[in-house]
Length: 110
Image 1 (tube, rainbow, N blue to C red):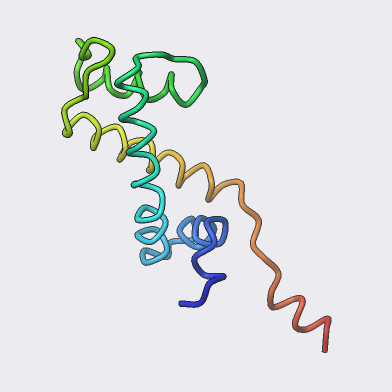
Image 2: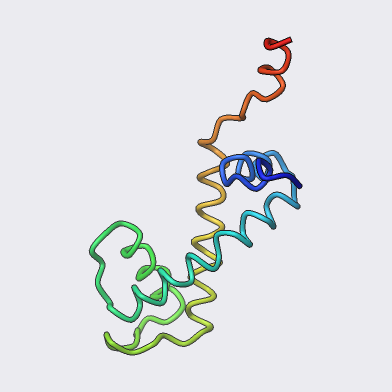
């Protein structure tokens, strides 16, 4: 794959059209970043922005009684929340991203 194929927008568009490899690559790129966000949010317990609110809501779906602030969440809770957020973000991206017009640019440039 070339660099353009790893662009999140392109991956989201391709995944939305059923490309399983693009979906897997998109998840592979998003999950590590989301894991950091989830761990930090669960540790702080603050719902100061929409993503933090979503993280806490998803964690409560699995564990109604969350760990007190300042403590690390169990890894199975972090993994659950990351998977749910990643699926949601992938779906949202796939619905909003417009395809790049590489083919059209090539035809028009000729």
